[in-house]
Image 1: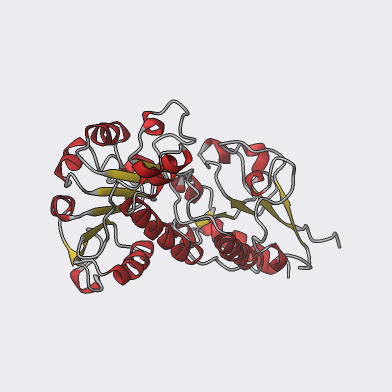
Image 2: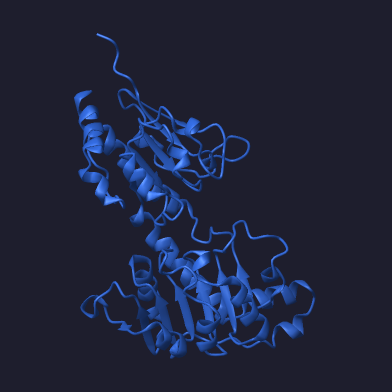
Length: 347
């Protein structure tokens, strides 16, 4: 009898640093060690968008940043699942994956706490003018650095656009600072599931909030959701925090609002184009905090996300569907079910 082919897991090359060493101390790979007939390896080359030659021969792909498009999957037949490291999946063509009988799963449990903490960090840094004061001190302008007065979230209004798991945890943490009200705009959440926040329309949230937190996924309905009209509704002393996806906010309109002072400032971890171009007008503004789509990156985040990804890969290896599948239609497709049956038959 011929030997059973090894179950192969590929990891995107951006889990490694340029020198080939791991970029993160623990992504759960110990779960995969010493499993019979299972092997994993890092892809040899990083590309912003996968090409079919990179994916051929793998049963599961664990992916960080690269895009998965229909072209990426052309002729790829063996692949059964893609574990997306994170909660966003706008860089994966779900329709193409479903048509190829590939389940796409995410790692929500690993993201909630670090991202919620990052939102609180942004709110407090903006409130207390942290970056401005730091720059003035470094420039030897000590006396001047004492002049910009901050504000406190206490007795102010916090509004979140989107009220999913990350937003709920951020709100829970921010309640320690005694805001006067917490508002949420989310057409997918019923009033009975609002957990103590006030569900309001988007315009009311923008008019009333001192802090506007963008926590919704990027979808056709949310692309450009916050534009010039919406920014004009915000209070002159209000702050915008976007840790979700850049294209939800019209960047050109935001730059104009920041320059004109029609809002007090912003904290941005995400941008319309990433990496943020060095000549972006945002880099010259002192009322905006900029981070590299990594504000929530902690050792704990990658440990937890990695373990969830690896557990999903092991589920497929056992012939089971992974948890947290986002293209749920694939779960009933004969082709996907046949892949799982074949894995079960190898045991």
